Length: 179
Image (cartoon, rainbow, N blue to C red; front, side, top):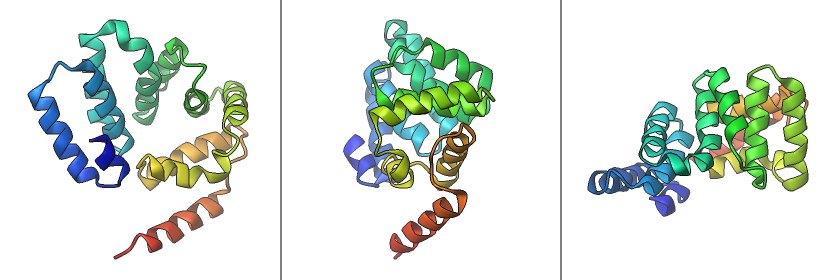
């Protein structure tokens, strides 16, 4: 599933994933990984369902999942839950944790916290923000979700490309992905 997903064969990835899920519905490691792929493809509610199931089956492993579940809550407009979960996540050694936290805090109107987390992220991954559209594409984020995340980072005072530049990059990328 993961190989297909990152090869932009998402339909096939999800077919394989559903087969694996049917074969072993209680595999919390698989549920945790599958939900990331599903959610990041824009299926936020299905991703939440899978991750909530993994947490229920294995609450001991939930600490790792809180960061992703927080982003899902944010994308589903549940900002209180997103903030609560990101604060529970113990992933400060992972760069993307700080980027996700910046998005969540910005969406919740906590702009000082968003800027602080974004600055930590920039120190850990200085290459990400200048290339954010390409980085988000690697993760198969739909353009509208990617643009929302970029806008949240911009509101947090972080140096992401302008709206015009982001839209232009999506147009150029979409044109080069054509038939």
